[in-house]
Length: 159
Length: 157
Image 1 (cartoon, rainbow over the protein chains, first blue to last red):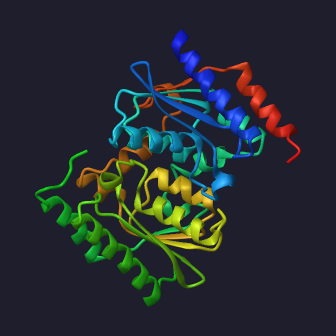
Image 2: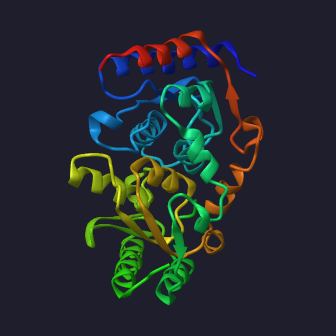
Image 3: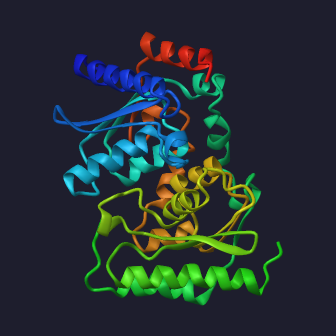
């Protein structure tokens, strides 16, 4: 279910994707974060221009919105993105407490132009030891102690 | 799995970093070390509270710093040592950067017990319909968005 306002913000995300690609900043991806009609942040893919593989449009928009607000929570905000978020960006939306995501192109359409997020999506539910990146759990008493210390910390920030 | 004393040293370092930056109040207790050819390339720690950046997780920061040090975004051959099992955001970043291997000391279930959402976010990837996620993801196709992809394909440079 999308409103006329949704489509306007989504169109802005798409326009960003095109403009920044034409400026050679990265792949054709743009994002806008909006809460109660107010634009909190915009982002675009800067992977190749910044040598930062995490500089996707959505992550960049989240960083900018949080930086502008001085708050790590974007609860109540909608993320408009020109393309379905990759697994990294989807998880970043959860950590940022984004409430809703609206996207235009799909992960399959992204794969068709050489951005294969589908592969990473397939890796997500696998047990860590069976992934394309081998991951091993090596329990250590010190690591468990760090968690215990967190629980005991009187001034910890809840979130 | 081969895990030798050098590996243990790097994992221990990741845990030490987690302690250090938790005590300084920067974030939750998570640390990471990225190693290439047996040498530490970059370190990261959770600084979500200090930076007000919800993406400032230990592994993601280590990846960003490592790419800055190298001057490119390809971390092929690198090994990530993390005090806690990477969340889906950090795992996604590891794939995007080409990290080759990972060792971690605590699990997503242990993270749940200290209030971190890693386990809950992993569960979201099992939902087939994006609209049914805790964050509803709504597909609104747009002709201009398709056109931007077409332009990328046709782009000479």
